[in-house]
Image 1 (tube, rainbow, N blue to C red):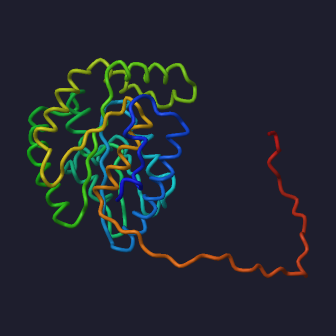
Image 2 (image 1 turned 180 degrees about the horizontal axis):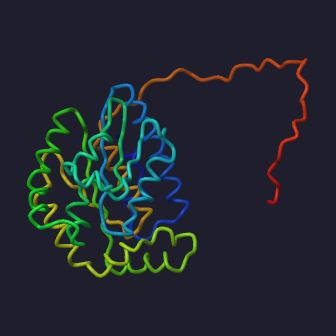
Image 3 (image 1 turned 90 degrees about the vertical axis):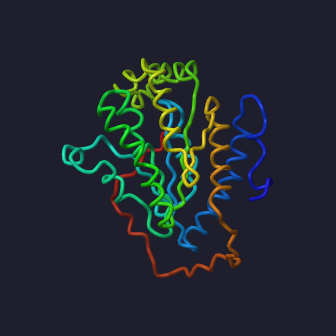
Length: 270
């Protein structure tokens, strides 16, 4: 992808204004549509993993990626807490059914790396289990890649002060309160524990076939642009030629009469 296609706002320093953001995002959305068409055409299988600090902006980044593409091609997986049955299964088992078939991009809003993060820090599993997970995960990801899956792993980083500001905003803003979970509050006190868990995760699972890519997300808008630009560079695609599109002429039916159905209508309040 050329520099023109990537856009240039992400190279500037300082806060990114809404106009600049929307202009650059529009360019990237055009490229994402081209990527989508190529994924379907070439039968690619793509997995994108998003991990990171609480409030780092994973959800907003995923929304920015998916808002102009088809949900039948770009599929978002955000699994709830495991059921009792799932807890008794092989750990990776609950993620396997969600891996892509040809022509699909699957985005994991948190993934199997829960075991290396929240489960470890909050004591939901033993250190022995965590170590075993960290040792085996590169082999599992090697199997994915060897099967033809393109695997991208993004870690969104945010500093402590910015995390505090965002959590407080969730408390104060009725539109955001649903984002604040009891686990967020418990996790907030464990900043250093999460840092050590992240460092250990990178040490064991950053591999040549499935490297971690870190994005600074103190500026959410800039982070979204940078991440989309990065994934467009990491997934090979071509701009498929398309035929010129023209709307056909409508064929009015002079015999049709509106039956004036007695249905409820939305009140025009605005």
